[in-house]
Image 1 (cartoon, rainbow over the protein chains, first blue to last red):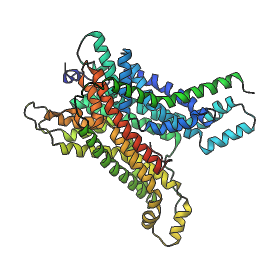
Image 2 (cartoon, each protein chain N blue to C red):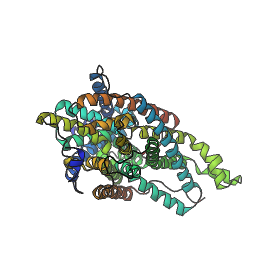
Image 3 (cartoon, chains in turn yellow, green):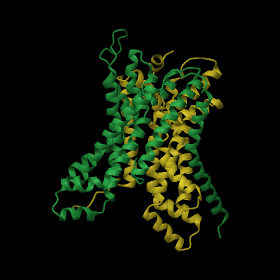
Image 4 (cartoon, chains in turn red, cyan):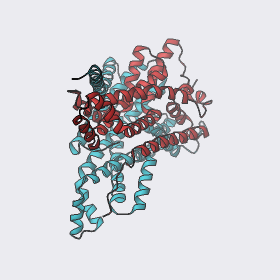
Length: 238
Length: 275
């Protein structure tokens, strides 16, 4: 069965469940690992890894999402993993982790955060208290804003998922001994949107799904903007 | 005295920091492994043309996107028109919210031949049209980060610089062109380099746009490198390990482009804000 046949029955809500499962798995893992790494770097407790974490964020820009997806697909194929939500979550984590960590390091290394840190240390606070309470409490709005932006990116980034799930699809087909296409409607929202847009870009459902993606990202970005304030500070009147 | 809980948190932090460092390295390692696995098998397609096309499209989009983003930042920030500032920031927020899959879909819709849906009667759009729309779509994607990078660079310039130029009698356009532009020039070059990396790596939007050429039975993977990687997912073949290995070779080329561009950007402006 070709893509046309598979996509004939796609609806507006197809893929939401898988996307929700994958993001609910990937987002907490990414944020917890990034938070611990960033707190460790900001407190200068990470040793040799500190400068490397900062450069990992810059180097992460050099590794395209589609290539990361390819690596995940290779791993999925070699391990025989066929759980779509799990593979999608792994791909989301791999793509977002370096960037999110660098963003959090920037937040925790800001002048305001450092002033609070030094004040707490001068008052005799323990490193545990400094890391968990001072840094997090002072930057909680920025941390939530970064989490919202990461959730938006995870939910709509088709570049990494399309290729990553190719490995899962092949492993599944190989184990089942069939050569048919995977069920596109069971794929994450952005991936099925990619296939649907490739086959029937002008159809009503595809346009509705595209509009819903834009609205979803807008809402999450607006929430992040509300939390962290104006990203471009205006200069005073000249 | 550091307690057990604090030690545990510090150790977990160190472990997570190394995990973050290991992720890009592991990706490159897996890609290299997959490429090595199929090194003796002749590739189904040549990557010379995709590499050339990727460089062309990415360079054009990076140049135009960075220039437009910087121009928008200058006009909205340095000319004292609050209404224009508000409109520019709203437009940038809107552009930022459009995912690549939607941008590609829009480009695809522009490319749709009038006879789409009538098998045997359609004419494929010319290749230059797909290239043009791909450049336009990538340019739109790069405007927002270039705008943000230029704004942050402008905010790093001390206010006294503007005041000194104004005291010497320079008007706002002259201050922007003769004083501020040279000061943010290195950021602009860095934005172009990072824009090149992002444009070369963008697969979703470009794949959708170049799908229009598939009407003419042209091989999908022979257009740009990112598209050839997406072609693996579209192929639905049981030989995907081989295809993935061949795609991984293309991925290594993309990574090389990316590292070259990021290194160049770091030399121009290490503190560039690029999101």
